[in-house]
Image (tube, rainbow, N blue to C red; front, side):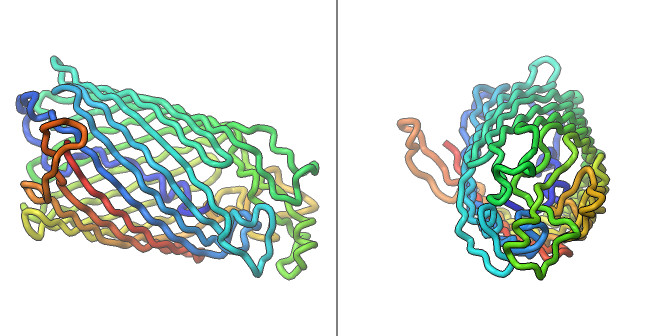
Length: 413
């Protein structure tokens, strides 16, 4: 399953509130009584002609539908539980070629689903105003099972205008080593590990500089080890030719082989500036580097505009550029006689430029869109609070392009 590159798509979470921070005020338990439920529906469609499943050549056609729920349950005025669960259902012409491939033909018949669930508990300390959270999660699809756990601690200033957050996350992925059909049972099916371990340590500092300007600085160190290759990604050396017949190409297939350790360091800055009471400017910049030789720069700008008290329109633009990994080779580029230690034809690890442009809409009346009887609490009125739509077009210089559409329905119970 291919898509955005890891450096291109692993953006840092926006930890700033969308409204301006004020001096901390005392709140009553009534302010925390409602459970918030957001139903999200995401659709993603891409196309391209550099699939790593067929050695850097061939279709990257993919469709993905991803419904999910995000639930926020206040336990009291200081504690809350957050739950995120859903499923990704995809159809991929690329992975359809794990068992069979033809450089001229492919059908989008390979389908699968990934189920995931994540839960977090957060608590604010009454005396200091500091906060901590504990989280854990699990996901499963046809060839990968993953679990994670972690936590964070936030130091807040007395006026709540400055905060420092330290966080850590552990992830473990267990793979079924699914090799291309022509390699199974041969000495090329030789990846030695079937697990991947990821450790992430992060630091972020946010500050309200004045009534109009907020800033957030964030830095992470991510260490990965174990199976960092994808077992069904093919690589063809320089003894293969794109014009060879299929039988010849099948006989020359090799399995992608990458270093079993990787260190990634992203550093980012966010600036939110209120141009007026109705227009806000959101900017983002990130520098990324890793031990595989990739360096990247990402910048984005978003302009949320309050058309009315209930309706916000947010056009946005994002640009990304990166260098190639040291071990990236195009089809037929790696030497068969002087075989390198590591090699991949995954264009997510190539050098490219990309941009994403789109617009978001948010409709959230003060009194909500509608009311109905709560299905969970007898005598309680639930509220349909908001609806959002976000659409974007993504284009990459290697020919990959994609459309993304997201719907968000917000409720309180």
